[in-house]
Image (cartoon, rainbow, N blue to C red; front, top):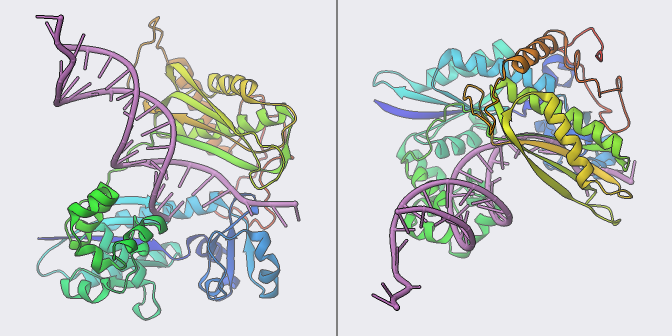
Length: 421
DNA sequence: TCTGGGGTCCTAGGACCC
DNA sequence: TCTGGGGTCCTAGGACCC
């Protein structure tokens, strides 16, 4: 029995999500912007053909985009997150050995029996996903994750119809010499240029180089890539583990110097981060709070963060908000124009572990029950239905992200406006 | 005017222990 | 008097990913 890795990748995912609910966007150039409408983070094929680069600041391309009638959307994460879940749930119908690698990608591990054809299998997956969710996907196959990644890039080329199988040695020999080192998964520009300095410019050359030499030169991560290119599995399917850290941060739409407004933003981020933490059934052992001025401005800069330990692991939003607020008191400096703030919940451990503090007070049950009620109400009636009383605003405020081009939350809309208790 | 947000893993070096 | 050396844990920083 032969084991193969299959990488399923949603095509231009955020654009495809917008197109599912607005078919008039099909065959037109479309881009989706990052938070605060800052950068271009997704492009339709038509937008790629116009040479609009990934990650480009929107304001620099705005005139060009208008001139070419490119449709622009602010990022709509509730929609993309929900569509992602639909795609991943559909994939799990095919294969339980599945790793959700990112919002728009998943690896499947496929045990090939002698008589079975992988072509039929992946074609069925591709056709089912578009039928069930409306999202087009590309599928790459290889004996390792690294080769499946390369296959996936090839699948996206025009003449391959979204499927490419790189499992045969002959095919690998044919293909790898035309893959630049920088385009291999795990090799960025920096490592790519270091490899070029020793005469390794393509995937075939890296595959055929000495693993020991590569390890000495760039470390164990790149050594593993050498083996993966040879078809030796070093990176297996990862089971979905709870996150060890959870971060929530945003750039503000306007610069902020008022400490109370900064606190208000941090509190909203804390509420979101704590929800995510409870959702994966974990508690934080410490938190990190940070403030940043705008690094692109010439004015005075102040970037500072502070780590605060918790005496006992905690998943209750209330005490964490209090700590976050006093952390702001300690790092805030008046007179600076802050552009971004955030919180990280660190060293998350399972909520099932009952760890005693110095005095042996570990009864979480009261707060757990309270949080359970809060979370279930928010899930049922929409985010912010019930929250800590500090959140005073209703609707838009002077710091939350700019989203001028936002589409509807087609799949997760609630009728009720947020209430404050 | 405007420049995202959220993660993971690895390594080197220091502290500490026996 | 002799002042070694290996193991482990922790942390900060660097690299990568989408």
